[in-house]
Image (tube, rainbow, N blue to C red; front, side, top):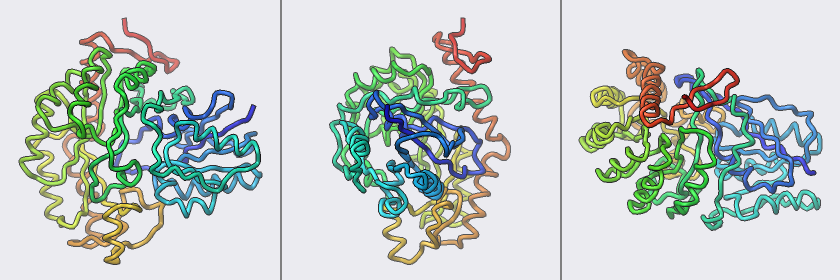
Length: 418
């Protein structure tokens, strides 16, 4: 039996965030595409140690973030020194394909379903591994996307203060919104590709976790489909979080009924549009975590201060502040490169916590200071841990009300609460 080692490299976490680890989604999707006759070992280096002396026939390097690249290079180098082939894939491999090709044996670009990974592994067994497998924007039929292979995860690693982390699942791929700082349209295409709702329900029914994260790029792309999805989720009694959902009274009400616990909502200004959107969500009992991008060309230091005041005024539950970062294959990077505003390409510092470009209305040092100010000021009176605790208390209350609450026993395994 051929042995496959699937590795997810560690990276430097944002120091302002409460540290916890979600089970990564990319690797479990890759693992689902590996035929059953291969022996698969998964290492999430954020919670596991890599044994570089372990016996394996191939290493699949799954990298999501740009800041994983430096560590990915080190890992690949150590395995290749032993003559073990390394194949890299994932979001950051697609964003940095030429660079990654320089430190691995092969790059895999695109989505893995429909027998594609099996073909790579067969080539390795035959000694005919290609330097590139290019399926970029050659999307497999969305119907071929089945349940992720979550059995590879060490579940006890993904617990924070006794609370099991949410499981990640996606109901669609692609995004028809081509936002200025985002690479999603480049990676997954500009066409919305929803999975058949029955396949989504099938996958969710395999997940032994009452709390989920629907990691779709946006649940605001097709009202008819999203209403069908929410209708199908209602009987499952799952509690879930997501990126933005369609700002429509009917959709929001249905989302709440379907178990929506809270959403990540982009907050980019202090307009009534944002104020009203947040109010609609909260009126339906849906918590809101603001995703706030700092350093756009319309912002100066005073603007950021007003933005933080606005978040407190409209009673946002949580806020996550990120510094605008010019990742490859985005509109913002194209613009900033033409204007000579990118300061360096030290990928280990492309974490969204450091300024790596020249802002328009302030110095890099001032933007870095305002980033620290935003985190400190928003959480000054109600700390981040307490705000997070309130959200978890709310979901426990909901679970107890509908009989789905499960406690954690001493072995780390969840059981139904009698």
